[in-house]
Amino acid sequence: MSGRDPLCQPRRIRRGAALTLVFASVLIAGAATGTFPQAADRDRKPASDPTLSAASMSRHEDVAKAAEKAMANGTSPMEAAERAVSRSGDRWGAVYSENEYQEFQDALDGQYTGVGLWARRERDGRIEVTKVASGSPAADAGIRRGDRLRSVDGRKADGRPVTEVVSALRGDATDAAAGTTVRLGLERGPRAWSLTLRRALLSTDDVTVRALADGVTVIRVAAFTKGVGDTVRTAVRQAPADTGIILDLRGNSGGLVTEAVTTASAFLDGGLVATYDVDGDQRALHATAGGDTTRPLVTLVDGGTMSAAELLTGALQDRGRAVVIGSRTFGKGSVQMPSRLPDGSVAELTVGHYRTPAGRSVDSHGITPDLDVERNVLERAGTVLSGLGR
Image 1 (tube, rainbow, N blue to C red):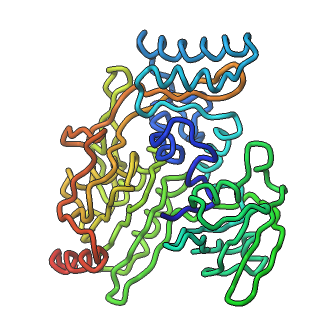
Image 2 (image 1 turned 180 degrees about the vertical axis):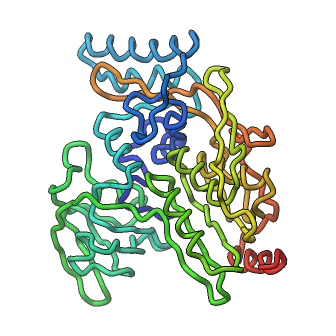
Image 3 (image 1 turned 90 degrees about the vertical axis):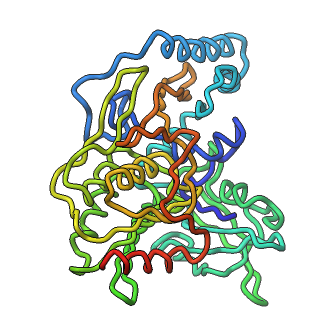
């Protein structure tokens, strides 16, 4: 298992696997529907907000009342809210502290606070640095890929879940701000040393573009943060003529729906991308005209492909625009709406679901690839592109 600084996992797990998996990938359908107060997609605010049903209003009110009662009794409002969300049976419902939610918004803006390290746990329990972000505090301090991370703030890293180590690098709710410090113990071959890094506000690197030896362009999208859609469209326009494209969405945890739709617009000439409902009120998302509809396209997915990434995959597959290769996607196709609690924390409850252009439900089902491949996926993608006449 691997982890990284920028909001890969929550600092503390509250509601088990659901929150662990969804913290960085809650479907921001509010960016498309306008349900979010101070919508995450601040550039595209709709003219009007949809009205929630009485049932949804009641669920939000129940959570708020539980938090208010806890505050009056001198107990934790967040814990009371979490219990209320758990009782609601909402699989994707979650509660975040004010700081956590702000970090979530920062991540959707393509930013995070950290030192710029990616890490993984080896079979022997050691924590190894797998990547160092260029220009980050870690890079400036000379930390390299392959270095062993021995300790964080004096606590031994060996044997700990990588998510805990990454959380320690980020800091807890009181010391995660830019400018705070973290002390690391490191090892490289026979050398062992310690250093103190100052956390900084860094930019995520959510789109990477590279060319294979045969001219195929690989566009990897790690998450749909602000600006990703335009970056993908630029990469498509700049790709060599008469060559195929591999759109790699493996491990993509989702993000802003509007960015996924903009990405779809790079490959479609308008038309339906997805439908969704907010308490039964049916709505639709459409691509803009002018995308590249002729260049051969393969999309790569796996079990870590979630929410907005599944929406995009389903659109390209249903519209016959891409051959989807890999393994079944995660199956997160629900719409959450946030509400502010009395102590400043935020509760998110499910208010709807989305479907692919062909009417397929994604939630709990995922997207089944056209070609089920678990090994040498990139090589198989190249073979498929060859057959598509790249």
